[in-house]
Image (cartoon, rainbow, N blue to C red; front, side, top):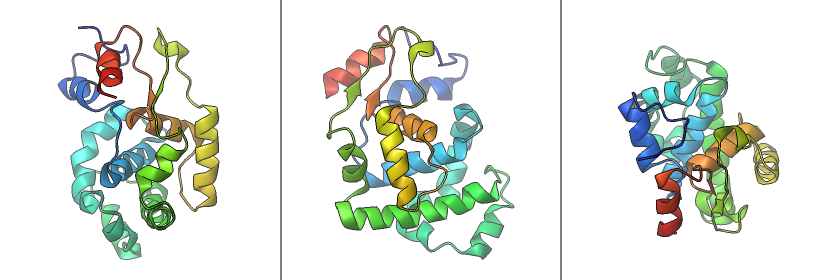
Length: 190
């Protein structure tokens, strides 16, 4: 079974993530927010580092409940800074709270976080046709626009590269390589 070349087949959790989640269109706000949190935590690190800490983030951030996270104050951030299961970067932890607040405002305006995100791609996944990972971009015109709009709305740690990775993870763009078996499955499911 051929997979995207970024997958280390010696890491079962990485294979599982690729085979079950990456690139599958997300239409659930809690899940969309979860991926946003994880992508913002990744900035400057490997995705595998974040993936290994995912369960710790679920526990520490109330299963990614935007309403609960939006109420986190300075004392909660200080407590999170002592959690060895997290990436203890104060700016990133504070950004998660700011992003929960901004996401709730987006939900009020657009009815859902998913409606907001998917609106940037016309509510339909973009299926790219790359043969090699080296050909996959790290940003796009859409990620540039989305990043700029998110920053205007108060989101933090949402540069175009982070947002493009978020779009890949949540299936807004399908960057599974042409030879990857998941590419066909995801297109077929849509």
